[in-house]
Image 1 (tube, helix red, strand yellow):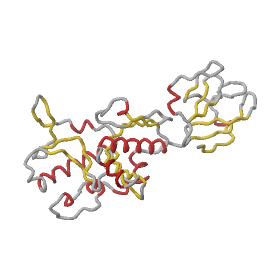
Image 2: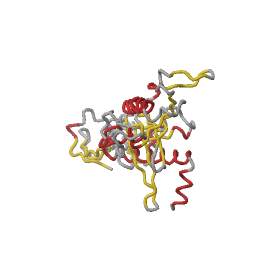
Image 3: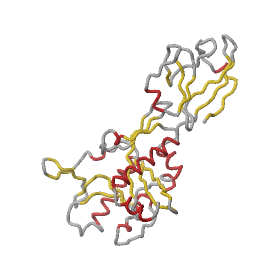
Image 4: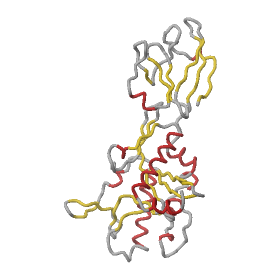
Length: 292
């Protein structure tokens, strides 16, 4: 992509938003999560952009994604503030104080800075917990209206410049947005890079491949458990047959086995030779290795 094409991209907020959401989904998938773009089925889904599901525990995580391709990003939060620093919402054609705005945040936020690096698009991610986002909005909004926002004289959208999020590029006592003191205690080293993802989102535990000896027929076989980096595994709940697949959504589809059983994610170890379930299998596991 050349500079002209990237300039056109920057001018389209919807394309920038879709790129950021797609980049987050790809990153989550790489970390072992099943990730879905909620805006694909319900455009502008309120409060959430991406649903991440741990394929091993079925734990779900709702993620807000904010994207910018600007040289100096100022990420919108979707909030409006009056000149006294109160978050306000429009009700019955009037602006009123919104006392419940914090409750609209249901999960971590991922801020995506999209840049052009030697004709390649590069994504920088910055991850904050919902608590950190609330803390940062409250602190920065109060400072803004007591300082550089005084001259505005009317309600303004609440934004979070990248330098407020990271603390980099701030200038003490400057009479601009860069003068924000950022007294929120957010550790930069834990909001970006792999450390940020692991600290705020978490990596799904890698799958294991067991070598098992059946106590009933002495058959030795392999049994995959969990999920690999690219593959997922299902087992027939009747005969124990394995199904390795790249389609992580297959576990929700009631796929039938030729024996009459169904492939599922949560199946106890079943010997594929005698088809008996092995209760308390630990003594019969000969080896265990991570699988990808």
